[in-house]
Length: 233
Length: 219
Image (cartoon, rainbow over all chains, first blue to last red; front, top):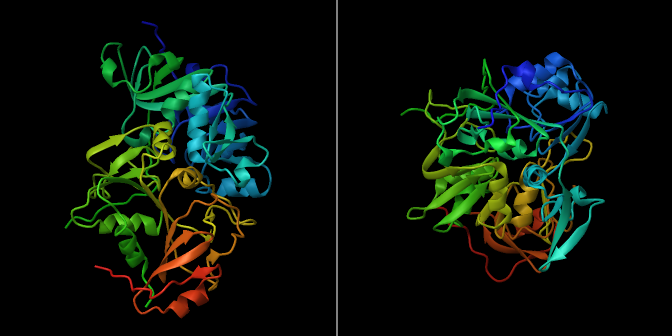
């Protein structure tokens, strides 16, 4: 067993520097690496390029890094839940690259899977395809999209073990497994950290080979963005 | 009488077929789930990684780890499954999802759709819409026939930045059901009490009216 455990978030983020490119898991505020984001705020690193489906809300998630002007560029599929984001984007302080969500997911997967580029139909004929190679297969047009080159990937799982194996809960899985594959250094924070052997190998969502550092996170807020309920009769 | 948003959803629900997997966008499309015809089994896909999406949870049972693509708390039904985003879009691009229902700002008579960006206004992003429209065999657009200024949303060509090209086959609005083929809108049904003339006046693109156009039946 190769032990991936680091003692705390400080150790987990050793080597993080200004100007780096990061992937951060999560969909909205669901399944985001809360501890790693807090540590990035504490470290005060700037000029960051962040690849993440969304950009948090004003006072949570990646919004915390935006507040401190630590992000230079966001690569996302949907933003907009965030006033400070909008202000920085409109003033030109923040560079934003909006890409289709499936393309984002597949670019993350390709990054970890050793595939430098792939063709997808998404965005053909739209401004997303401008300047990109296109090609026809079986009578349909496709756009060439490339893998990323992230320095770190920060992911969050429900349970993990000392070998770095991860299990996610519910829709908190989202982008986390592909981003785990993609990081040059992948940092996984988990709600529950178990000794190797405690997780059923049949149930692992992200194998430990993709994880370089794992630690038990703390103080999870797990904020709900849209609380919708069915009224009790 | 033009249809309410609920009635548009009700009409679209009649298009559902047994054993279909269906992706519903935000807004009117979400309401379609309330009108599944009796005897029809469908499963709803949410592109953040959920198949077999159920209703909102009961109060006190909300789970921050169980949301839909609109970031609303939801539940999963028996037989449902949860997966990562790459798998989710493999289902979509791989055409394993039989129907996509989504809203639009504009639809053109060649099937182009624009629904993600208004130049000069805050751009929130396309989310999964571009992947959905580029891949689905069966796309129904649910929208109002005209915008808030009374201008037609069914056009000769879209004026807004496109989400996808030549992909929309059917449009259900508050006034009509229309099919897009051969570069024109073909009128299939009228909303109850709405005349062909009303629909003509509200449609900027080419409208083909072939024979008597029946009224929609909402049950």
